Image (tube, rainbow, N blue to C red; front, side):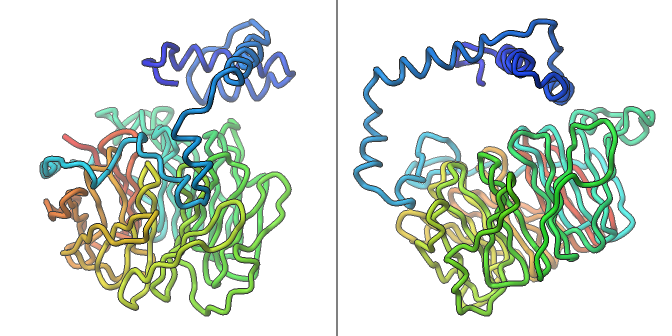
Length: 416
């Protein structure tokens, strides 16, 4: 909850903790308190439930916003997913070209195999990394920011957990929206869910499996479903509660292409997929039908895809060495970011935390190319490595990002 809304973050969390205790979930309340660093209270009440009831009663007495009425009249996932008030990139507004950023490495840790993937939690407080050695590391960002991160005492080290349960290379990681669960997928044809709120434990509490290697996973904003793709032409949705799997499009696809990456829009109304046939497909997140197909990279494989924060745009990456920005509503190309060499089957571009920059690993320079998101001007290359970069993940909260490399290291880079 934003302080500008009149209620502070800690106050809201305390209400949640008290309500959970009142429902009999004292252990879960303690785990959330430890995760959020909000002190527990001895109070156990239903104040939150009372406030929610009052809010619902008030909402029912108010007419819906005009924008909501318009969306209901227009219909369709493509239109309803566009949230222009969400901030971030908007090419319909003029803006100054961003300044060339300066990043410095704040922290480095090493796996025992090629570092393959990384992701930030939704609040930017944690990072998960995966490796070809089949291990996962959980990093606390607050500890990374300390100047002594590289030489701190064991109890203050940024890596707070190492997880093992896969039998092959980790290919993707994603945090549940509640921040308490980490999902990972691997070439061992499995998806694992780990409880990262538990003080101990290195093994998953739930897993899904299929007959192909997974390459990418993404949680629905509610956390109830997990989208997954890999060495198959299909995109699957898994119910986190029941484990049941659903195929987008009913599984009647005649494509032979594999799907390198999947992503949910912030509202959950759309899912985007990037395929080796060069297509970016937009799927209705409820009906599971394909609502738009974009031939994004001139016949070359599409290797990465992500939505802008507003859901108005989708950013695709391809083996034509271009990153492209597409208007979700019309499927129109609105910007091309060129000048980097992209040659990895999982090459992907990301937005910076404020969406002023687009960033992607440049295979020839072994560095991260940074473009102005609005103008597409190539501003600079940062985060030089001695070996190829395999993955990049941007913080959703601060000007920082993680890189993974074939030198087995993951590095945290922050703005000066």
